[in-house]
View 1 (spheres, rainbow, N blue to C red):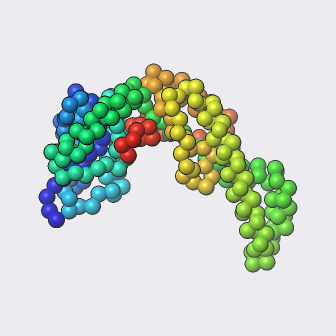
View 2: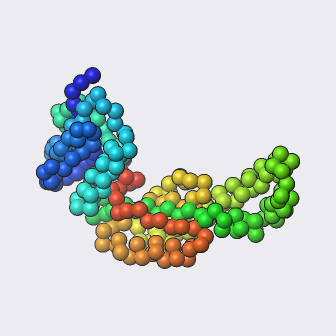
View 3: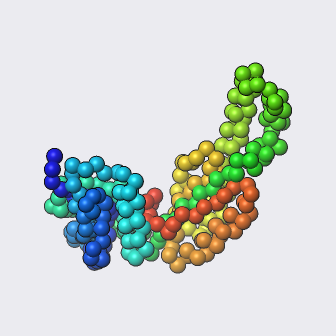
Length: 247
């Protein structure tokens, strides 16, 4: 199948301007433009329908465009983009039916930005912590020390179960700590599923642009307290992927 289609990145207010020459996803990359309707517009570019999308470069371009846009204007991001046949379809199938919903959602995110707080336990530190708090785990560790794996298979499995369960309990407690300490500085909070078995917390937050500095300082203070126990990373500011219904 040959020809092109309209790839939609997200929704913005109709009075937004796109810098000429802004390139979108795909090879060759299409130029990003606006498809307007009423008070809103879709950020789109043409893509070759014969070329599969979703490659790492496409995803980076998609996210970069949305994050840069959200730094300037409110945007409702599509997490992976949507492909419609042409600009007319963008209007008829997307903008027109959901116009009022999109207008309201843009008002909700105006002047706000998303961050993601990810804390990941240090492997050695969390193991020492679990063994120090769980007598059975410490006993099993001593029992299997220096013994062949085949001989201590059941003990190793049990120890693994204890450690996994203990980390899950600590994750719940530490996630609650993150939410409690940061919620007063955020408009909204979404607890994400852990992305790694050693995640201590994985939380998306919506912050007013005026409150970014205070929020970032609070995360720095948390990272300082958890130093050596867990590495705290702050991702953002970014488009509000977790706080709109367009993904």
